Image (cartoon, rainbow, N blue to C red; front, side, top):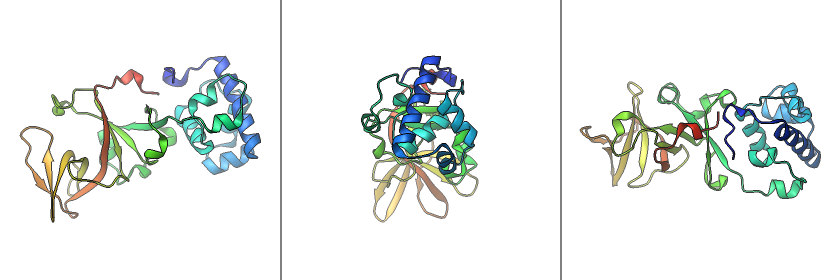
Length: 229
């Protein structure tokens, strides 16, 4: 996708967006009202997008609609002779929210966050069916250097089953502290090895620790300006 920071897209993309949305809703036999109800968003928001009146759509709004219609955000803004069938079958980039460490500390699950208002997203260029809808990104902390340089993004899937040697995001249940740990499974014990030099090893138990997700891949030194806002 072209860099559309703050979603300042031009009038031609807005026109294409409106045209493509109109066509897709017609093909799917979905009214603007039905779409707004299904996505729990104001009908005027949908109406303004379909009519081309919106000049500054949010990435979170477009992602929600694109996911529901099973199309890519790129496709929605492409100015082409739209074939709804080919549009629906395009490979769909998966956008994940870039969460901050405090946000994760304050919640039990990503489902506790209203992502319709979230501003920072990162496009993942892999088949979307390989990621759960609750997948999110975290940026590395300074203390994780040199193993993980500043700007590194961890792509974390809460629904992934932890395996031996996976790096997992652990929350300490007593105080909510977060830690990335390498999981060593030596049945019946699970050992949590530190990735930060000097930290102590832990033995996992369900009372003291909660696994928030598994790092499914790492994007080293991801530039912040490549994130979609």
